[in-house]
Length: 306
Image (cartoon, rainbow, N blue to C red):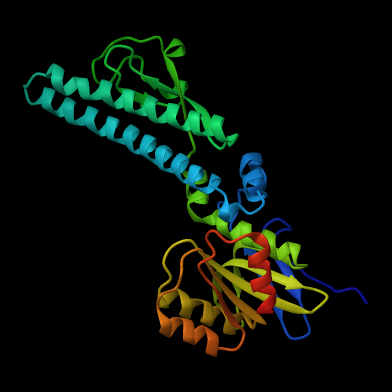
């Protein structure tokens, strides 16, 4: 007999909701579309598919690209703030000194140097995560004015120079804030999901599950094994683990009524009380200090805890 599912409104569709039915549970998983960028970016997908990524020097190169990109975005913001500062000086009757104006020129030079550093890392490691962006700087004073030519003013807002914007763009290479956020931590969720997939589990990442209490829980990984009829939730952490994160996983595990709750951590857990709590709690499993461990070793640790 077919399962009948009646939809009461248009809030959910096959892209925004998955319903999981079992003998003792019904789960509604809703992915966070803003965080789920894996399959919309081929370069990121290639990175996640890298074998033994956690022991690869590539990971350090990725971190450098992210760091340089964040510095570019910060420098662009500081450039705009500094223009406002200089304009306030001018309005107060003080002249804009050459030494102050030279800071705008230095800002652009720093941005271009960071862009070149990113290009070199990508070329040397065949790792093309960033994109070229056409940014617009004043040809006279190097004030940064924006990224979209259609929205640019007819003249520089700082030095009032008329500029042909269509001919004055500068190519700057960096990853945007969404990709940078993903590469800062979300990638680890997709990577661990990949390893679970290879062990026969079907996975969903970056979303929320409604527990038996009616509360939505943010989860990194939801996995099911049809042959075993079991469910698993996983939390993936790239930084230090604290007790709140452990207790959050415990609460999710019980409210969702999952068979297993895994805490995956790149860093070692130094708190022995937290480690003992995970060991003593049936169904909860801690896999820590995963940095510089091969895929096969990680999968073996997972299987030993199933």
